[in-house]
Structure formats: structure tokens, C-alpha cells
Length: 305
Ligand code: ZN
Image (cartoon, rainbow, N blue to C red; front, side, top):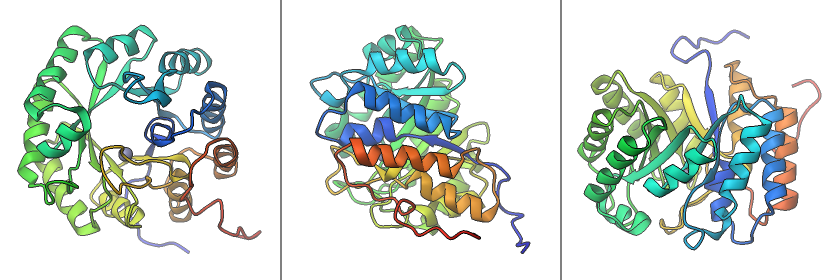
């Protein structure tokens, strides 16, 4: 059956964030071997872009204490993988660079309240640190994650102007990719469509990626709304792992396997082989003590579909 899909991109880039956004919210330490194994399985299934770890202080997030080892091992094994790490400051950026990481995510919240809770800095201070990273580690590509772009657990509604302001600063700092994050899964499709339309119109030179949590089950609908407005890059997480330690009630991301399933049904390209990816999901289920929220591990599969 041929359905009209004129308005949708032909190909989607899926950026897997489970090993960072997912693992950092798991309390029991996941063995480095297991982390690497899960990353390996996803890479074998066709994942080409991945946030593999976070160079935060191990006291802040003990789960990420092996960031250096994970990054070094993955760099060596999969030189072609687009490997991304999260860094909270210049020190993290330098450490990441030393381990062979060439692309990092840096997070600033659109709401002052969440930024203070999440990174213990004002937005102004976060922007100063961003400029320092750009200046002092100039060969490191930086993407800006704008957290709470659609709503804040402390401040409630977040005016679009606050998002625009951060994008303007990012453009000034030479950043080419902006990640709009619905940290608490509060966005709805019309809101996503509206913000996406406006930012693309205002900043046509930027690439926009969406990071939409699925707290209220609206994740895939929000992704579809963004796709209809031409967004072709999405961050999702194996098994739907994820959350935010400083956003009460934040739950998992859209599960990568659920997005893969949706795109397969709609015949939109993405490069991941579902059967193989589900092996990674099964491995997470076996080795990571966390509640998996993705649907595809449970869904009944029929021979002819
Ligand atoms: Zn997230």
C-alpha cells in the first residue's frame, strides 16, 4: 500500500543515548564490560551515532566513573562510529578530547531554575563555560542540548524566547547543532511543531535534533510532529532507559526499538536492523537493573508482518 509521505524526510538519523542518558540514571554500577558489550551490540545492529558516556565528576554520577575507559575502548574498536560524550565543563571537555572524543554535548536548561538544580550554575555562568570550552578546546565539536525547552519541573511554562536566546548564543559560539530536549516529557505534538517551525525559520544554518522524553507516552507522536516539519535527527534510548536526576518524575526516553519499528512501518530509512537491535535490548534487560519501558521487546511479532 502506497501512502503519501511527501511531508516526511526520506532518512532519519537516530542518535542512541542509552549509554549516557540511560545508564547515568541506573543506581547499581553497570560493569564496564557490560557497557561496552551493549554498545557493541547496538553498533553491530547498525547504530551509527551514539552518546557513549559522560565526563562528569565521579562523585556527581558514580555510574560514569569509567568514562575514560569506555570512550577509549569504543574509539579503538569502532573508529567509524560517530561517538559523542556529554561534558559538563572545560575539564570534562579536555578529558574527553584526551580520550579521542571529537564531539561532545553540553547542556544548558532554558529555565534558570532547572539549570541551577541540574548543573549548579546560572544560565549566564553556563554560557561563559561554553565559550571557554570553545576557546580552549577548539578542535572539539560541541552540540548544545537545551534542556527543559518545552517545560520545567520548577518554573512550569518556558517562554520560547528563552530557547531563542540560548540558540543565539550557540550560533555566536560557532555551534552547528542544537538539541531541543523535552526533559520531563511534557510537550505535545502541536507545541513541538510550533517550536520546530519557529527555530528552523529563525536559524536556518543550524541542525536541530530532538530529544523527547516519553514520560506521558507522547514521545512518538512528538517525533512524528517534528518529522512533519522536516526534522531528521532524533535521540532515543535502548529499551527506553533514561531520566534526569534533577527533574522529579522524569522518566525514560522514547525507546530506540520503538522508533525503528515506526520508521520501518512507514518505510523511512534509518540504517538500524531491528532483529539485531533487539539483541542489545535483551542484553540491557539481562545486565542492567532498570525498568525498560520500550514496547518492542513485549510486542508479539507475526511471521508475515
Ligand atoms: Zn534525556
